Length: 95
Image 1 (cartoon, rainbow, N blue to C red):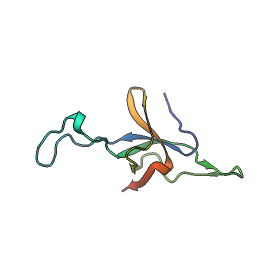
Image 2: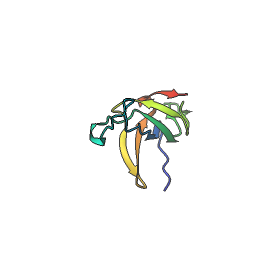
Image 3: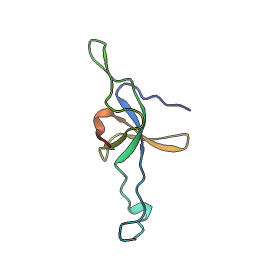
Image 4: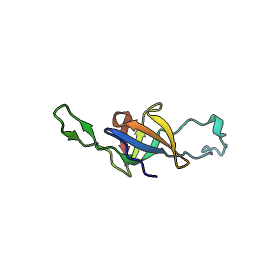
């Protein structure tokens, strides 16, 4: 199945963090905070202005991004977990 976000929405897959601290302590899943980094999987066409023109998004497929902790809506597509969020929920692109 393919998914195409609408307008200024972006499909992001969270980047999982390591399960062990730098001191060697393993962290159980229940105690972990959800990561706020992810990879852009799909993007919408952009923001439609009142005059009908479309402003393209600043992020593109493949970008590694940092996003708001509680931003977006979690969804499952083909058994994989993703987040659909507006581009404004993305704080920046990581290099």
